[in-house]
Image (cartoon, rainbow, N blue to C red):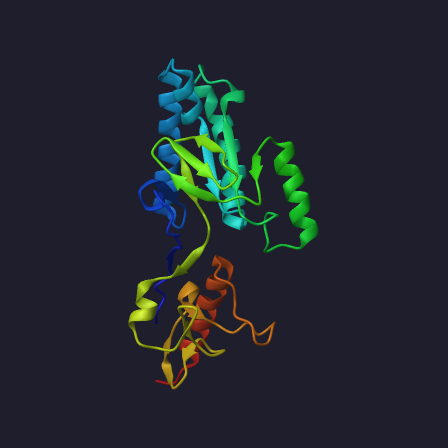
Length: 234
């Protein structure tokens, strides 16, 4: 069974590979948490207003499910953590959510997405829609509208792409994902299964469409493969 997963999708932008923090697995999530706490510690210890501003500013790129959740929960996390950093005022914390699209959460019904956008704005998130990243350095991010944001934290959540193993096997692929049938096996190889983000599994509820690259589909596929293996003779 092949479940090689996916990797973060990057774009050829100056500074992205060197400066951006991913959020695609538990290790990256733990690293990001420690990084954010480190920025708050540095801000709390600094008397330089510019340094404090940059350390307390966090930029999230990608307003899909992951990016929107990171921005929303990151804001709550840093606010709750301020009891450990008495010199930082709540008003110094700043979270930006950047996306070239005109709305957040494109996976949801537009009415739910609009409701989420209103709530996030009411909570004080700086929503930079119809915008994108042009350049990143260790101390700032430049946006496509010409704005320069002082920050040491850029969180990259613009999506994932199948891991390199999916292309290296020489099997048929669709957008980098290995083609499988409704039983999650390779056509012509009923004893070989594939699942998760690397598998182009047909969505039986939407004929002609593929399942999305989400954890929910991967979990269901894992259970289906277990049942199919148990039912396989020999």
